[in-house]
Length: 186
Ligand SMILES: C[S@@+](CC[C@H](N)C(=O)[O-])C[C@H]1O[C@@H](n2cnc3c(N)ncnc32)[C@H](O)[C@@H]1O
Image 1 (cartoon, rainbow, N blue to C red):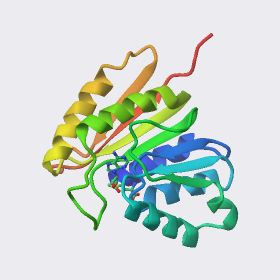
Image 2 (image 1 turned 180 degrees about the vertical axis):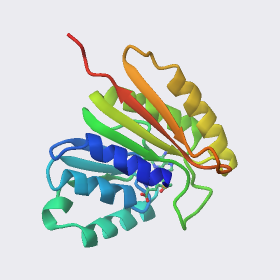
Image 3 (image 1 turned 45 degrees about the vertical axis):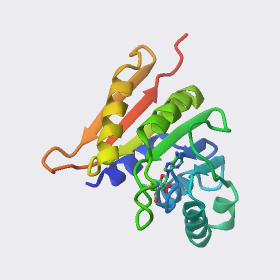
Image 4 (image 1 turned 90 degrees about the vertical axis):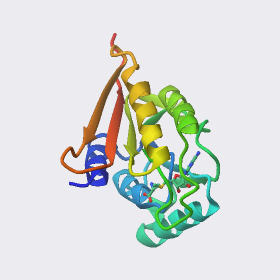
């Protein structure tokens, strides 16, 4: 199973119509397409990307693939994801790296990704999840994953449940971190 399929499968278990969901790296819009089908026209789906080209590609894909109702809950921010304009999200997803078929130098960067994850931890609802797909096949991606692993391992276990999924018999396989905020007890 591809790591993207595993992530999409997991998202389908936690997203319901009416939720607010953020794609922190919207790219070509494939992840937003999967998320918009789970929301089915109810709630909010927000995509961030630093590249205008990515937003335009995502918007075009979603417009042609979705019904009017499914499309009207979608918004985009052409800006970096260190801070989020929204609060209280059920799911925040990252698919790190560079835009497939685009400029490889415009890849996500370790420092901004870490700042964004800190913001995501403040925005995610109790019972919600931050999902991060990492690619170690390039230099910055390797650095980024090491830093993410350190960040995730240090989250307090009384508030967060964190897991890491990797296909272990494939060289430089991408991996998936799931950072689940525990529900408030009492
Ligand atoms: C691997 S692609 C995302 C794939 C996408 N989710 C899809 O389904 O097609 C990574 C994207 O992250 C974007 N990106 C890089 N740095 C960013 C930042 N600081 N804030 C938001 N997006 C960023 C890139 O422009 C690129 O489009």
